Length: 442
Image 1 (cartoon, helix red, strand yellow):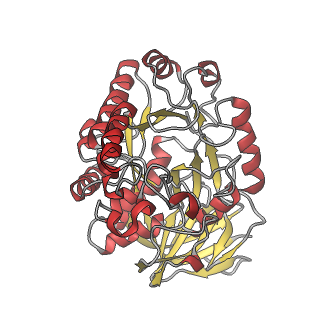
Image 2: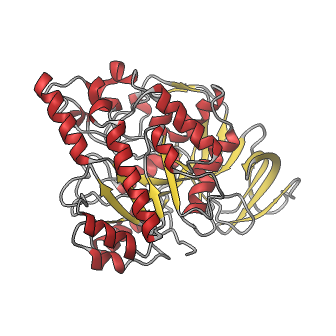
């Protein structure tokens, strides 16, 4: 179907302009005022509503294959489009782990049949899969994920010579999880000596400390500089780490940084109310850290806002500290959450769209996405002013919960288009059309 969106407040490339958008055959055909509505288009009145490029989330864990009791690609993509996210990049710590090209292509096959959103998948690095890494095609794979701390199975890359080789030879962008495992292990032992396994959740940011984060992030930056590597550090959680990044044109940067929604919304006070349901790795830390991350984001030192969407069942999230899982679901509420920070005066809508839509497209060099431009794919989201409260009944996650339960938001995702197809319309999902594999101009 072809659509004509009329009188929208288009948020794009740092400005808000009232105009019309014509969608034909998956593509944004025309952007101008007073487009003739006489042709056979489905016309949508977007007066007093924001029209934005679809969000591109560069870090999700949709749990397929092998961990589908808590999430899967179809369910994750449904929650994503309901939240205005039209493209995602999924992580390799599944079962089997995505550490070979064969397993990587298996995930693309699954997504082609199930995903409502556009998709890409990271290959996972290990200490011994360098030959697989060298086979990566920069054109059709978003990047390589390197766990420099906090991983499962054999995906912790902790040998310096292997890290050096990976950073020297990888043909794609490298995305890293940076926490120093020896530092975390030593901190954990101290708290176990005091509390046993039932460590108070308020201790989480002391165990997964600023020191653990900075030690690993600074090491990744040193490796990247030495080897001229294209490095993207994920889910930064401390103000101190922002010192590692420069303020310059992000298209020219070799080293970029991401901050996640939960590190911009919560601080350490949240552990008192929500306990393990706000436990992520890296940890939510102090209010000073939250404000420092926000400042670095606004000044261009950090580049991307993402989610690290990582669902676990309620059972997996409960129990004593040493047994309960870290991570939580976020894709349904990430954009709405950031729009709420606009109401609090902490960020502007132009900055939100820049960091959630434009910046991922720029730093990953995604082809024809991330902007509202003629000739680009019509990945779009229409936002209206409506107050609503997150409850278990309106959560779309298979895991059945959200850290935002009980929170009232003042914006609502009304419609989401993926490749010109209206896949989400006021709570109604169109599951017949599927997203596309992302391609990269590099």
